[in-house]
Image (cartoon, rainbow, N blue to C red):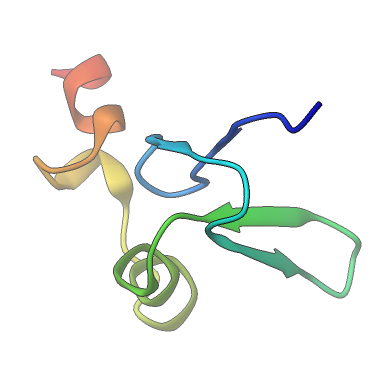
Length: 61
C-alpha cells in the first residue's frame, strides 16, 4: 500500500504518486511537494521556520 510522505521543507503531506525525491551524496533522502519547496531548500538555503506558509513556522511561533 502506498504511503504518504512529508515534505522536507514545508512539512505538508505528499500524496502517493506526486512529489520529488532528492538523494544527497551522503545518502540522505529528501522529499519535496513542489518546486517552490525544492528551490527554497536546495538553491536558496532558506530556513523553513521563517516562512508563514510552512507548517514548521506554526510549530515554533
